[in-house]
Image (cartoon, rainbow, N blue to C red; front, side):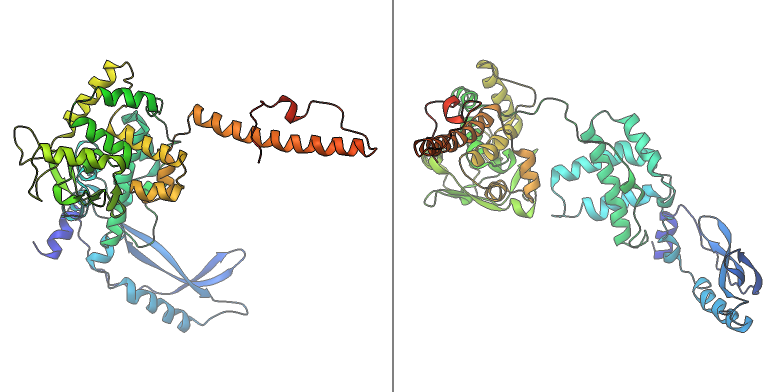
Amino acid sequence: MGAEGNLLTLTGGLRVIPRVQHPKVHEAVKSRQDGWWWFFRYWADEVRPVRKRQWLGPSRGEKKISKKEAEIERDKFLAVLNAPTERQVVAKGMALFGEMARMYITSHLERKNKIAAPTREKAKSHLELHIIPRWGNKRLNEIEPKEVEDWLYETFESWWTMNGVRNVMSAIYHKAEEWGYWEEGKRSPIVKVDIGKRTYKRPRRIPTMEETVQILDHLPQPHDLIIETCIATSTRISEVLGLKLKHLDLEAGAIAIEQRVWHGEVDEPKSESSHRTLALGYLVERYRAWVKAKNITDQEAWIFAQEDNPEQPMWDSGVRKALHAAARAVGCDFPGLGPHSFRRANITWRQEVGASAIEAQKIAGHSSVEMTGEYTFVGIRRQDELTRAIQEKLAAAGKKNDQAAKQVTRDGGAGPAGRPSLAEVAPATAVVQ
């Protein structure tokens, strides 16, 4: 199909009728403030032809221009108006949203190595189940923010689903601008859609260290090693299952994250920052024993292969099932518990033991510190530790003040009176600065 055919498909058969215009210049009062001006009327080719007035310049007063000068200005304007192309008209947002969405799928989502598999499948699901059926027959420039906002609230209960759908619609406008089907620099209507503050279906939490130890004790091999890798290195479950022998460096005590497995499909890591090398710590010997027990010698062999088909990696569903069984056995299963819970735990605990936010971000493979912040939990126990540390420092400072006050009294001055000092009410174990 040629370029003209593609444009006709995109616009639902809309054709641009060439229009050669050469209207006369007239004189009229532009406004009470501006006075008399030269002007002409012309047809603007939008979704439907619209008659508009173009003002050229004052016809009377100190800054007036002659009618001849006004006609020259008219001709400059008409030189552009009289030569529109199909592409110029389509760039004003006349393409059907459904056609742009299908182009977005074939020319962006399905392009190899452009979009991670989970993101691709989720976006396609939103498009095919919700977005195209509702908005496919509208043109890009006909979609109103309030319509979209009302539809999101009426259709979805989850804030996260609303956010995901809105992001996909916004991405289509972004690509339409890149491809010349939406005016460059013009805000898309989706930018103005407000879905309120982020909300969560269930309380956000991570397992405690005590719960983690109990769960690990009830996990069979190799699920315990897989989960403990998530705990120790902050890897995603898909990254652990994507490990081959060539990614394991037992001498250096590290694993290289170069791919991942999602729903049985081998894919690139989630983002560029997800390509990273991670230290295994005390897990080195565990991996050494596992590789030896399974007689894994081929560099292309999976570290965690399927029992009945060693040529294929394990599925994450089996790991999740074993994890919930172990958690129920020790009475600490909770909604939302999964391998990702231990990735969040690592990011939190790593900072508790002294890592900076930047270090936690780099090790987790996040693209921003803000994302690492979303993964970081500050539990009551940690808050209590930090609060007591502050109180003990204040107590130490109070003790110094009391000593200084006693010295003043011994020298003949008056000591402090009133409430007890911090040194008197703080625990006897208060640390000195």
